[in-house]
Length: 147
Image 1 (tube, helix red, strand yellow):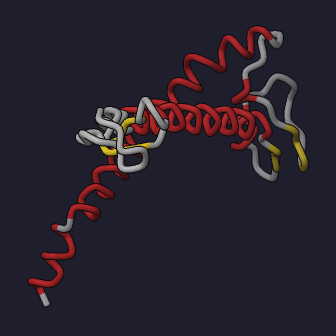
Image 2: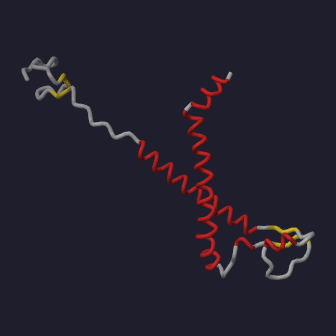
Image 3: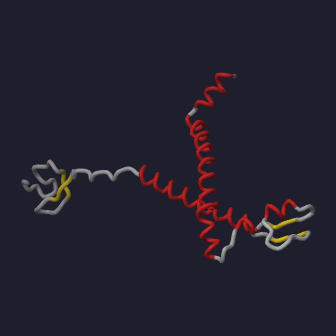
């Protein structure tokens, strides 16, 4: 039983999957940082100093105006609808999907086999009767002309 488990774990696709999950987790952190720290601040600035992390609606309770989301969530009995975080996560997803698309496209382009060289011709045309004959033929089988 242990040997079967070892063989299962050591198969290439299981190891590849494990590596992909680990790299994917690290890559996800990089993309989240890219969205949160690099992309969203200029987008918020263009939209009028909007901080997407602090865009929310109070569904239940009262919160003083200008309160950050983290502070609003600490107030007892307050229920918030955090649509800014949702927008940030959607943008995060779109960027990850686009980067993965680019990576898969590049990998497919690199794995595409080189075009095969055209095969050497094996036939030719008889100059007299225009029939197709073997390349090494000395006489046309159709009109019996010497080539």
